Image (cartoon, rainbow, N blue to C red; front, side, top):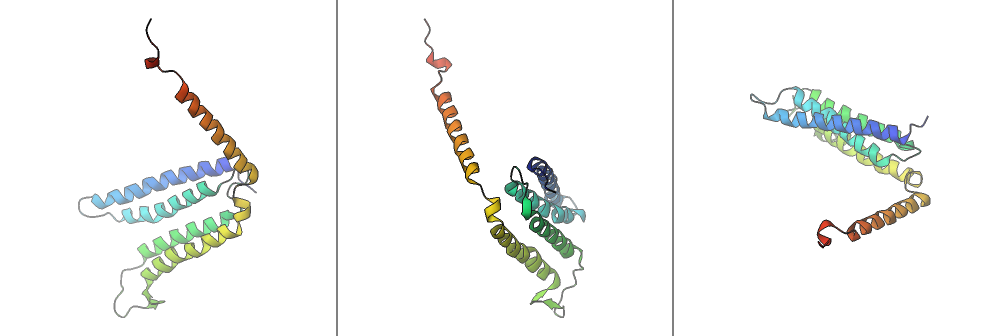
Length: 171
């Protein structure tokens, strides 16, 4: 089932707006008297992946196909980021000299570096490469953009050539 692009974009804009508000509230919580409340970082843990997901969907949604086959990689990245941030926040801060290391890093640092930093960097380029032919602009899309550009230029030229009030001389 394909979701129309206008619905996809509407939902993406809503998620982007809510995520941006969550991030703003999370950052603003750092200025509270008595220190940052415990909910501040959690707003960022959910807001950042939501905003990234919203931007990815807005950039990839096509008129007739929505995001198409990029839906699964996008969902993977959003879920991976959300789980990674939540794990990094939720795990106890008990690292010390005798802590267990994952690939040379303490557990929470490994989650951030490998889960949040590395996995999306591997998944998204591969997904974009595999879907490049179907997700890029077609020849008719490029022609439509050219026509819109010509119309825009003609409109701007007409506005620039139109007489203004100070061009009219009194009798």
